[in-house]
Image 1 (tube, helix red, strand yellow):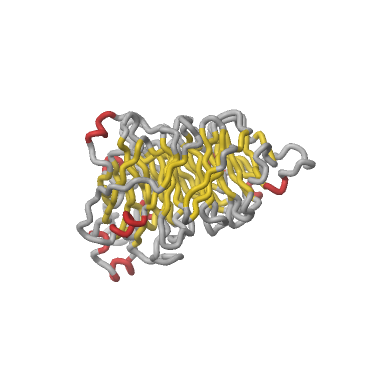
Image 2 (cartoon, rainbow, N blue to C red; image 1 turned 30 degrees about the vertical axis):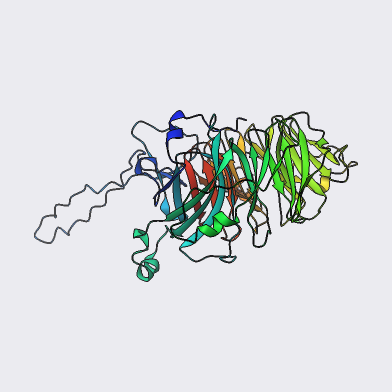
Length: 474
């Protein structure tokens, strides 16, 4: 699966960050969310003619038998062809919040900053902070961006909302940002969790180096009006063990603060420990993958255990105390395994997304040497192109989000079971019952994340910009 953003020469002359397009983006690109087709064949309602009794004046009353024809609205399923003149329109009623950030320089990767505004935030307007990295091929001076998105109002309004805040819909979202120079494209950026008063970020550069930045000053400056957007700041340290081999796989431990894993395109995985006194990277790599390491995930419950996936079609479980050999090796797909996600609420569940558009759910309790070849407990073939990102919901153990190169971002609830009263057959053209929501409107979606402090909020990045939204489904 190609990860690099398209090389667009014209974007080098444009600013890196633009602004919010508006409530639902540009009118001609209003293709987000679940869809209704306004241009299907029209069906006339049955004609109803009420006639007067002939006894009254001996004549019936003329009645206009032509009624206003209402269009037949249908839910659009991705992949269905559109007839000439048909257009897709988002249904705003299925979004609690939906905003689009248009950017001139695409973000291949981003992560969500943990802020001090509190957890379980359900009130509007919302505020979110993210860190992202630009990815302009052939340009040395890319950037690490820190962004604050505020005044994110509800886009789903009812009568009570209008009475409480009649001007809410007229207020535009506000975007503020700071930029830090970065040598080479940012393949991946990850924020260190639980860093207390600091915001530490690691970046994978196309140059083969892994940089670690302290973004605290940039984040704090967002609250100071008049601070210049461009900041001059060097990395705290740089990891050089990968040589000239670039990579994409990267993950910080949530159990052992400061412990970082990085995997490159040559199949090597290195472990680094960041402490207040410095950084230490192991000289010996974990080497068992026969091709590029695509993604890494620390175990949410065991400090020395992590998972990796590769374009060699495998998922491996490792113990950091043994670099010579993985603890478990699973042939997970007949194509590249692009992404994995470890469930933080049900630690025995791991999900993997593949290059053939399939994603699978694995029960790690079956990953035992004496249990035979592990098989997924569930497999879904909905996306029509490679899976690009996958993530479990941070608090709902059965819910996960998946994005693909087919311009879809889907939400799933694995606790939903098929309707047995339908003779085991799925209704509505084989739509899986576990599929909650299909979000569209972005082209070439690269990465998604749930906002851990705003329940149900999803942020996604694509070649066409960043979406932040919350649906009625979760």
